[in-house]
Length: 62
Image 1 (tube, rainbow, N blue to C red):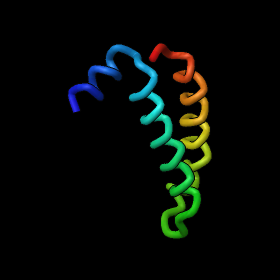
Image 2 (cartoon, rainbow, N blue to C red; image 1 turned 30 degrees about the horizontal axis):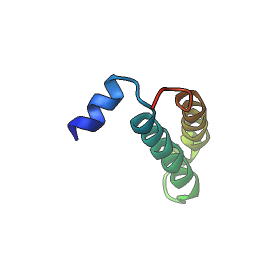
Image 3 (cartoon, rainbow, N blue to C red; image 1 turned 90 degrees about the horizontal axis):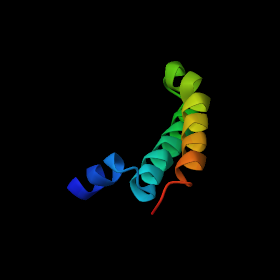
Image 4 (tube, rainbow, N blue to C red; image 1 turned 120 degrees about the horizontal axis):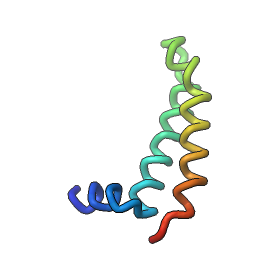
Protein backbone atom coordinates (compact mmCIF):
# COMPACT_ATOMS: atom_id res chain seq x y z
CA UNK A 1 0.00 0.00 0.00
CA UNK A 2 2.80 2.42 0.80
CA UNK A 3 4.37 1.77 -2.63
CA UNK A 4 1.07 2.74 -4.24
CA UNK A 5 0.85 6.00 -2.28
CA UNK A 6 4.55 6.67 -2.90
CA UNK A 7 3.94 6.20 -6.65
CA UNK A 8 1.03 8.61 -6.54
CA UNK A 9 3.09 11.25 -4.76
CA UNK A 10 6.01 10.82 -7.17
CA UNK A 11 3.69 11.06 -10.20
CA UNK A 12 4.50 7.60 -11.54
CA UNK A 13 2.48 6.13 -14.38
CA UNK A 14 1.32 2.83 -12.87
CA UNK A 15 -0.61 4.04 -9.82
CA UNK A 16 -2.19 6.97 -11.66
CA UNK A 17 -3.27 4.73 -14.56
CA UNK A 18 -4.92 2.45 -12.01
CA UNK A 19 -6.85 5.40 -10.52
CA UNK A 20 -7.91 6.51 -14.01
CA UNK A 21 -9.02 2.97 -14.90
CA UNK A 22 -11.06 2.74 -11.70
CA UNK A 23 -12.77 6.04 -12.58
CA UNK A 24 -13.59 4.75 -16.07
CA UNK A 25 -14.98 1.49 -14.64
CA UNK A 26 -16.99 3.38 -12.01
CA UNK A 27 -18.47 5.62 -14.73
CA UNK A 28 -19.53 2.61 -16.81
CA UNK A 29 -21.08 0.92 -13.76
CA UNK A 30 -22.90 4.16 -12.92
CA UNK A 31 -24.21 4.26 -16.50
CA UNK A 32 -25.51 0.70 -16.40
CA UNK A 33 -27.29 0.74 -13.03
CA UNK A 34 -31.06 1.32 -13.19
CA UNK A 35 -31.74 2.44 -9.59
CA UNK A 36 -30.30 5.89 -8.81
CA UNK A 37 -30.88 8.69 -11.31
CA UNK A 38 -28.15 10.85 -9.75
CA UNK A 39 -25.49 8.23 -10.46
CA UNK A 40 -26.74 7.87 -14.01
CA UNK A 41 -26.66 11.64 -14.46
CA UNK A 42 -22.98 11.92 -13.50
CA UNK A 43 -21.80 8.74 -15.23
CA UNK A 44 -20.72 10.47 -18.44
CA UNK A 45 -18.69 13.09 -16.56
CA UNK A 46 -16.95 10.44 -14.44
CA UNK A 47 -16.13 8.35 -17.51
CA UNK A 48 -14.88 11.43 -19.37
CA UNK A 49 -12.68 12.55 -16.47
CA UNK A 50 -11.21 9.04 -16.19
CA UNK A 51 -10.50 8.91 -19.92
CA UNK A 52 -8.84 12.33 -20.03
CA UNK A 53 -6.89 11.49 -16.89
CA UNK A 54 -5.69 8.23 -18.48
CA UNK A 55 -4.50 10.10 -21.57
CA UNK A 56 -2.61 12.62 -19.43
CA UNK A 57 -0.99 10.12 -17.06
CA UNK A 58 0.12 7.89 -19.93
CA UNK A 59 2.82 10.54 -20.48
CA UNK A 60 4.14 10.25 -16.89
CA UNK A 61 7.48 8.48 -16.35
CA UNK A 62 7.54 4.80 -15.41
